[in-house]
Image (cartoon, rainbow, N blue to C red; front, side, top):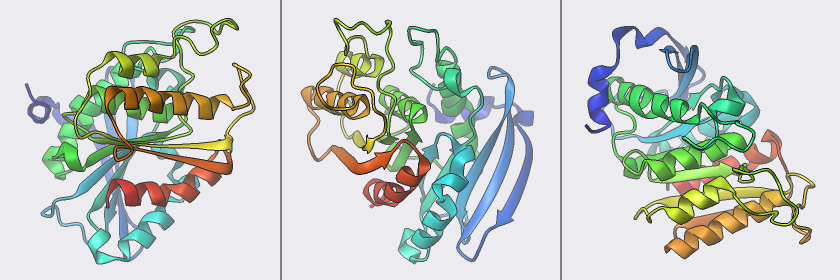
Length: 284
């Protein structure tokens, strides 16, 4: 069964409520409250649409984890500036509000050594088999994986790349801002400080996904930890090591972008500054 076929299986009460807000001359927000029996919560989903959205055009689509933080990301300002150019009004951003973040985000089916992330597969399945089919059916989003991407920040970035890597039939691009690539299956061990990082293992053990592209950002002030004492903070080390794994699989500089922000911190002040650059790369 294809992902599109799952639209036929969505129960009618999936969406509890809808509302619409016209933000300005360029941007409209549709808010959905949807039920997830398996997540055991109601999920708010914000759709950021061009004000002239008509449902007939072919739109590029971005799924954004931590959608509740759109104000900190300054997403309205970023999209308004982008949509002032008529040719750029073919982008949809779908922000999914987080719930039990420490357990819903992570790597599907592989919790970390402390048991965190045990709901990650349930969250991914909600997105892939409930939310996206609904959006395809009712809005025409996420139709073509070549024009569909996911992104996230910190642990939400780990979740985003996990979903994209595992589902090339749904996405072809991912953006990870200060990704939590320290996520590991065993407790830290000073003898093997870089061992058992789960995302590194999943990509290294998997098959190359032709056409997939990756955008990574890390800041020099993301943290202070340097577990292997090489003079490079872990946030940067873990990201660069994952890029090495990707390139060992066969990906090239045309497929992988890395932006290291001097003075960049682990917060939305840094992420919002570089987010427009990510959108330009992702939806050129």
